[in-house]
Image 1 (tube, rainbow, N blue to C red):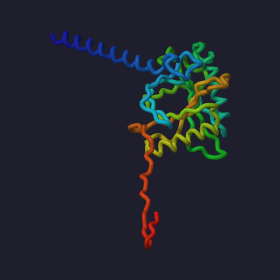
Image 2 (tube, rainbow, N blue to C red; image 1 turned 45 degrees about the vertical axis):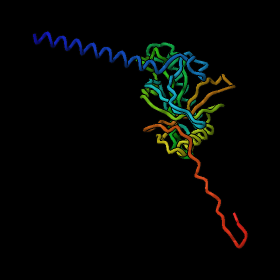
Image 3 (cartoon, rainbow, N blue to C red; image 1 turned 120 degrees about the vertical axis):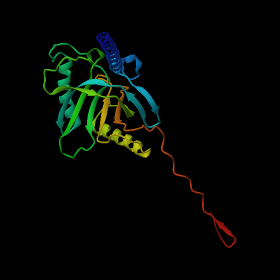
Image 4 (cartoon, rainbow, N blue to C red; image 1 turned 90 degrees about the vertical axis):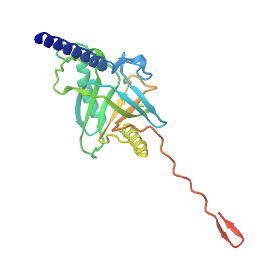
Length: 245
C-alpha cells in the first residue's frame, strides 16, 4: 500500500511542476507581444509589453515582466561611438551571425544602459541591448561573437520620461537630468547609478520619433505631483493711523 501512495504522490508532484513550468513560460512570453498593442511600436512586429501603473504630467510609472535581451558592451568617450560599435555586433547577430545561422526579427525597443557617474574625458562602458522576439525568449541561438551575450532582465517597475527627436549624448543626458529632478521633488526612491536610454524607431524614420529615459524604481513607486509650499499670509503693521501691508 505504501509504494502505491508514494507513486501517487510523485505523480501529483510532477503534475504540479508541469503546471508551474507552463505558467512561468506563459509569463515570460507575455513580456513580448504584438506591436499593435502599443502606440509607439510602429516599425516592428513585436514590442516589449507593460502595464501602466500611474501617470503624472512629468513621468509615467510602468511595470515590466521578465524578458531576455541580446547585449553587447562598448567602451568609448562618447555614447554615439560606443553604441555604434555595439550596434554592428548585434545587427550581425540578428542577421545570421549565430550558431544556427538564423535570422532573428528586430523588435522594439532597444536599450542603452548609461552609467550616471561619467567622468569627463574618460571612457565609459555603454551596454546596448536588443529585445529578443517571443520565438527566441526561451532558447535563442548562441552568438558566434564572444562580445555578444544574453541579458535576463527581471520583473521591474520603472519611472519613464518620454521625448522626441534622436538619442544623443546631450539629449539623453538632459532628459535623464529632468527625470531625476522630478523624482527627487517627490522623494521617489530609484536606482540612481545608471539610466536607460530607450529607442523605438529605426534611423530611417525622420519624423514623430519616440524615445524614453528610464530609472528603475526601488520600493513603492511614487506617482504624485510635488506639493507647492504653503502660502504665507501678508503681515500687517500699524504705524500711527496708517496700516502697512
